[in-house]
Image (cartoon, rainbow, N blue to C red; front, top):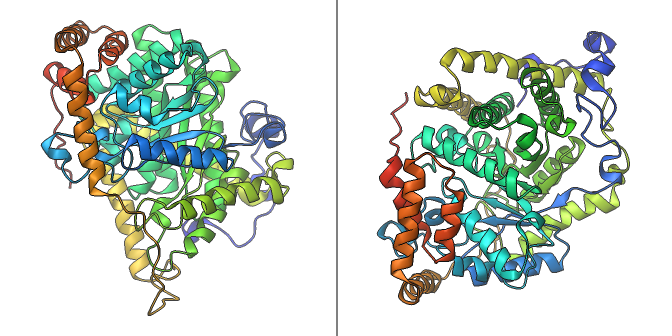
Length: 522
């Protein structure tokens, strides 16, 4: 949150006297896009409404997708379980007790086929929150679409695929940073050639914020990661305008209403300036910062969970006023478990009320020109630029990861926040103030133990019916591509078509790249 000593009670024209309208703001749809990347914004098209969904088996998740689509959701967003996120098959010993608990379990092409059964992938946009195994899961998605009769160039969607933030915050990494970054560039290069409507990376600040960062840290560290992907892709030999228009971003939206709006506006301005001036992009779409927003899971409380509906509504409003292209509203029960159908419907209805009953979408950037908002936007930009200088002094993003710079900065911020809550300098309703002695129970979604057994049997059946010889040949080709520093996406697609499992493809690359052990940071 914005510290009290950094904000004033009243803002006047003096606070924006150094602001040049054409240089720093522009109209919506004009460089530097502070006021939005489209001139009519939501008058032309509402933001995409996605609800992050996945639990148990692909069959169960497929039912949830159809439930949400029937109720007005306009894009899919796939949540994967921990074994999938870590590249482990359902029958791996480390998967025991975790299959299907924080998302859907996907091990093979068969699972992807079931997950999207009855959903025409050529006609819907799909976002997938997957990082270390992103290339493999994307391969399964593309192959499933092909089996449906779709062409690759028709597919629309987004891979999160932001491995750098895994080392910084979420910790779901497998390989060392350098080969992991190479895999990301492989997906960027493949998308640029074959999937022109696909966003191969969603550079994610969400997990940085959820780990305890400040808004300014989330802004700076996310954009620094984005610049690292741009530089790695240029180093590969790609022209910036070949790939930059399809890079996207993913931000958290926290409780400090105006700070969040300023963060989004500053992000657009910073990205536009750096892409145009630093990386010499000529295509204006390369200057656009397009982003998805999710309301802040870390602000939700298990105490008085109905209050979470209110928190989410305000956060969603801030995201819309900040100009998001896509939005996920969290459900009231997500501190207790994966959302029930009732809770996720309320979360979706929150977006629909905002879109259709408030009249807010009728005006682009309605807070533009506010002395407070413009001053705060500039302040956020300045803080981000200071961090960019520090990251450069550390030797760049990968070097800063390895020496613990990001981790220390986030840890300090998280400590200061918790200290503030403990001392009641920050009030959390129902937690450290306005506490209720007794509360009514809340329905919780149960993940049945048989889901795990079902997935284990599914993997065994795939292994029994496929050609082991063909699978082994394709896995060797994957390793060969990795050793020769080739783009591995064609080899991954070949292995996927033979029903190689996720774990087998991950392990094949472990033999080439090794595994990463994070150094201890104090």
